[in-house]
Length: 600
Image (cartoon, rainbow, N blue to C red; front, top):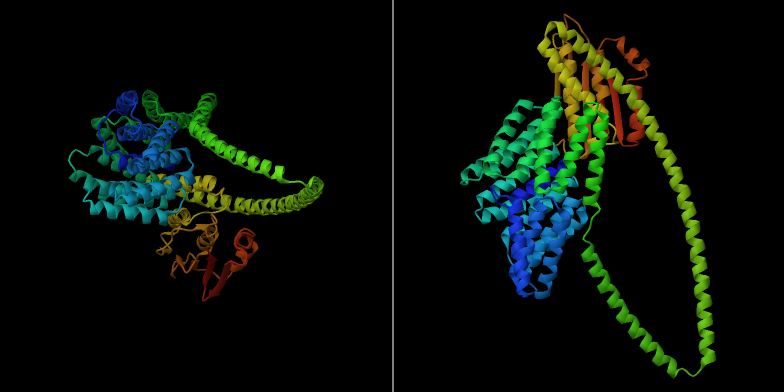
């Protein structure tokens, strides 16, 4: 839900370069213009089509996707009647955006691709740029980031051909959002900073600057840099207020609320969520009203006020269902009517031919026999088909039930194995924090924050069968940092992560037991070198982890007998990566080495 909201906002910035306007007043003005155009009686007037497309876009800007789709359909129908290509291209684009807002991504992609083809035919580069950015956004929500980057780069090429600095800045913002959702914070920050530099070159472009500050704030929030996130949000809020952009200011208040929720400052979160809801109700932004109800439900749940939480959750369900389930009924009725009329004409023609044939037929008895024979054959064929499909359905149902039992058994085994891993690691981390409280309270606080991140990861991210490798890498880094505090004085720790660790999935906490064992069994000699060397690389569709540490001779037997260490890991590997992994263990000259290779 958060991802869709960010992307919809970004598309609004890219396609609607209006700063400091009251969108509701502008929409009312356009509706008045449409009323005058309708009064003129000129159905082929292209100005009416342009007005309908603008109204459709304003409703989309105000998050009313139903009306946006309705006016886009009307504009498309009129454009078809007079073959007005620019109008058809724009209405198809608006339809795609409305479908996108409703979550119908396949329909959105189909409409936007048709719009792109029409814009290419009339060489409308600005329209092509809008389409490429919209296609990129559809790929983002479907986690196809390579395709998103390709389309974003196409938009960048067109903006540079048009020498559109403002457009280039917007596309940099889009690139930043792609890298943001890929988990590549460094590239996301670079893209946002480029967008910020270009926005400052364009005179009075406060809206784009504010958008970029807001995106940087969200990036820093994801990275846990709360002070930096606050600084960027402050800049964005100030610029949105100066430009009078109520819609963007409303989303800014939602970001503030989420930040304060993360920090546990629930009073401030309530103030900002309430401000966002108030603006959404004033401008009648239905989707944001629903999302604000959901935010308030989460807030009251966190403060254990379950009565209020339930109340707002019910409001969210009622509001959001009314948005998602509403469709363009008028268009569907019109299309059904046309289809029925077409079928009716065909039926009349068939009946006419049948009557003429019947008049010419003199051999009634022969005709009767033929009809009886055909009818008998049809009945027999239908009976055979019914029996066949009934049998096939029965066998399919049996097979599905068997597969379900197998999957449930494997899932239960995996849950048991993961439940054995988590408590052991958590107790080790708590022990590390406990020993730091008296020695260095600042370090203890830092460790406690890292511990909360690890616990949040295990509670919320490990429920899925597979997660992004970027998320697993962040978890492993923090895990190594936690252990390093307890081993820093006598042990040299290195953790090297190679390039290219992106764009694929991995089972959660599959590498963690190997790192835990390294820290658990590493030597603690005063007169000898103690070290832990860890590396994680990806090449040729293989993820390779190598861990090496100094170990006393008698520790190997302890690890073998523990029942939670390597034996647990081997069981998980056999369940999740059957015939797709290699686990190699060796010990030479008091150095324990383990190498895990996964086919990903």
